[in-house]
Amino acid sequence: MSALLDVIIPVFLIIGFGYCTVWARLFSIDTIDGLMKFSQNFAIPVLLFNAIAKVDLVNIFDLNLFFSFYVGAMAGFLIGFFGSHYLFNRSLEDSVAIGFCCLFSNTVMLGLPITERAYGEDALQHNFAIVSIHAPFCYFLGITVMELVKSSEKSISKKSVVILKAMFSNALVVGIILGFLVNICGIILAESIQASIDMITAVALPAALFGMGGVLYQYRPAGDIGPIIMICTISLLIHPAIVWLTGSNLELTDMQLRSAVITAAMAPGINTYVFANMYGKAKRVASTGVLLSTALSIGTVWLWLYLLA
Image 1 (cartoon, rainbow, N blue to C red):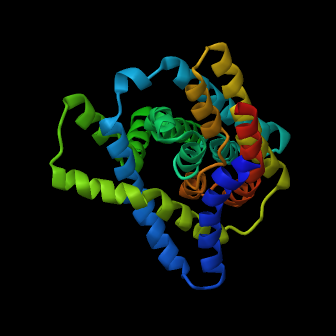
Image 2 (cartoon, one colour):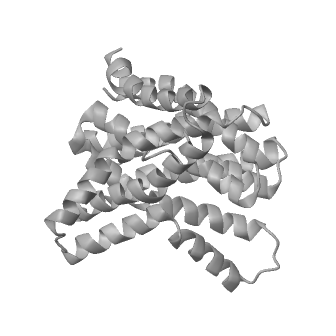
């Protein structure tokens, strides 16, 4: 019960406050959209830049950790893609968008604050290792498969340009790359610059959680119930279960395993709807999947925290 009250509820209360302010019309949708643009395009990229720039790359970058998490993520994408196409008769393009929902966990807005509250700040180093390649990996996979199943009018070279442009125009990816450059090159930032970065990182997650609540209010439950239940099941149960089994067999440390499993157990991120909207495919399923899985994750994350205790 303490995990629910001390770890999960505080995080979801902030999301709930954001939801209620839009519901009560205290904040307009335009205001929330502006807050989310600040969070996703500036504050969180700065947070990731700061974390990657300071982290000990040699000690936290563990191939077993990456394999454990991303074999689960890849399995989630494949199950979602083929399940959507063959079980629910969705088009290939719809199936890619639905598979992306099963692939892209909310590693930052939910994964970081819940892990920190559950296991302390030291545990976040493994979260940051996972996050450092999360957006590049997921977007590369999703965009590549989507471009391949779309019309074959474009040549491979043109499709490659589309993929790379979409990858490197993403603010999260830019922040991560810059963080790696500063870390690898041993660049020491001026104290005034670092102080400003620290101030921004302090508000990044609370602002993102609050904005996320406001955005979720805009998602009206709609879409096929079958694919939505599949998204929730894969994201909240199957992905973390695969990570736990794989990580245990690869003998991850307790701290690594906890970070990997809890990160995998997060609901799909809002970027899954952004991806679906970008291609105009399975938008209702994606939006409802994010809304429902985020609500259900209050219970499922509690379960995973109990199992990992």
